[in-house]
Image (cartoon, rainbow, N blue to C red; front, side, top):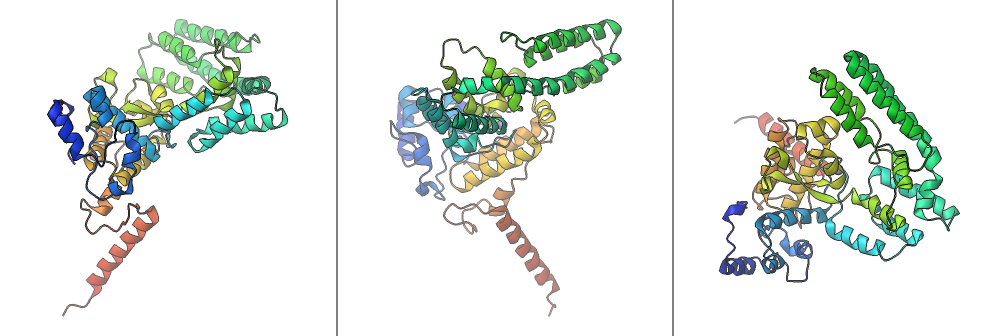
Length: 413
Ligand SMILES: [Zn+2]
């Protein structure tokens, strides 16, 4: 199905009604989420694949902007358990997160909060999963503790381990500073010393911010002309552990945090899953003039989206080499959704092209699942919306090769 450019969507009243009538099996009645309709089996293999640009009845009533319709339709795809193209973890859809938030805000009981988090355990990122296990085991032995108490009980131990990890990076930066002109090297050393003072300060108010440290370092390095040396520094500085990749950094950050009147346990519970939330990612960032057309919009977990900020895809790959593999998993899942009648093929091929162009060819998929099944629903090896496994695809390929060989070796008459 062809993706209609947003500018061509006709929003006059007659067109809206006709559009809805034509798609009434695929789009929701008011008060229903579109997702429930999309998951109906009747949607599979009927050829009625919903367009990402088609408004729902709710959109029509609210007169939602065309670009917002595309965004919300792409976000809805997360309901189908899609792995993040960057980190590969299954993303949590907004509906499930909103329900989780409502439940969290209805209680302050630590045991109940941990139960709510555990119910969405499959969406937790590795750090959060480790922290959850730790909190469960401490609470089991100390049922009167709050979640923040638990983090505080581990603070000293985690702080020690964190300083050991951070020190490795500071020492490496100190050694690298020998390559710099004397005056700039002194500034780098002063920044490292100031940071040591901060992290060794025992007061609770004393906090080290990795983000501020890196931005101060970048400011000092602005005066360095050699781009290769600058890159070496930044590549080393980004190794500083964060709450995204180190359970110790997570514990230190959220044990010390000032929750400004909010309930700390509810905030900690929400933070455990907020990183897994599916968000809209601009393949070419808006700061680099990336647009809001569907071919520039993809899904990405909130954690990677925040960390990427406005950097290019190539910079993101350099910081996340596993993205080369995870991207293929993302495209495979989208292809499966096309076979299940959920997603138009044009969106998949167009986003694949955008990723390829933006990454200079580093990220590209041959879309093997789409190739295997061809364009037509006729003659597919797949029945009832079940997508073939990798093993099945391999066996099919082997059988095909074997068949070819047999044909070749047949004696000619
Ligand atoms: Zn991710």
